[in-house]
Length: 354
Image 1 (cartoon, rainbow, N blue to C red):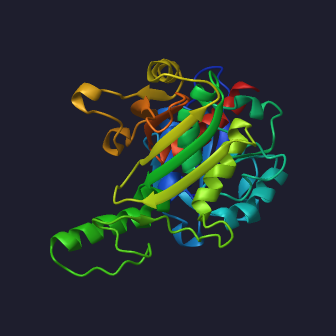
Image 2 (image 1 turned 60 degrees about the horizontal axis):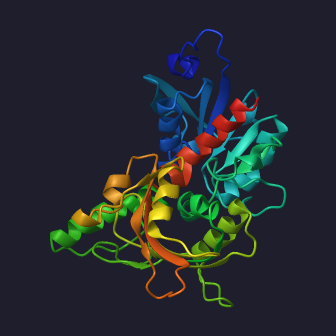
């Protein structure tokens, strides 16, 4: 056994502190790398860390808590002795390997779309619906990035004055399509600035200095694409609002990281921007950025790398004379609150409940 394999990222735990063996499935992807970073930064009580990926990555190393950890090829036997498996390798991998992890006695937190709307599977944003974790389900779903970021802004409002309708337009960064899309945005921008031709390979349209409708397939019956439908379904499930009227338009924009969204929110009763600011300012995981005097509102470059969802541009909707509608702007890091951070927070909540 090599020294790298022997280490397996086992820092000395604090005296008396219980540790948990953790596996990351899809460790080499953009979200997998962020999962490692969140575990380290938040001091999750990791005993042994297993990094799992495809066979072509096996033997390479990544660093966790200052020590190299060998990447292993994902197999059905990978989960023996693992307490938590954080999946971020796509729906097909989750469908194939999550049952093996559960059979090994492992709690699965899955970042794919495979189980989000499945009956009996909790779909969780810990600041919003922690009660969904009460029964210690063996599999917990992590939401779509749009849903996770949106509910951080919507739930604090809904808790004080029930929402009746939400219309959203998203401005989604390259990080939502993974590391390859981020690299394509950088390369295509460099080519455009140099006056060179660039043929897109990851996304279907030119990305530099362009924006386009999210590339998920369009449902011919409704006219909505898959990203829009997922966001709407998942928001309803997370917030336990099956009758909430929702309409989203999802667009990819040439931003490396952090998703933005414009939300027009209708309430049951009249509401003021001042009330909304107060409710949002008190909400965990939310930071209000609403400086009208300096025209300073949430921006992706300020949300990138931050745990909080930034919310601002809070104003009365002049199109609704009843006073029941507000418009606002929210931005969150897709790789963090929209993915890795939320998954680690779920694991933290499960640990706290043990």
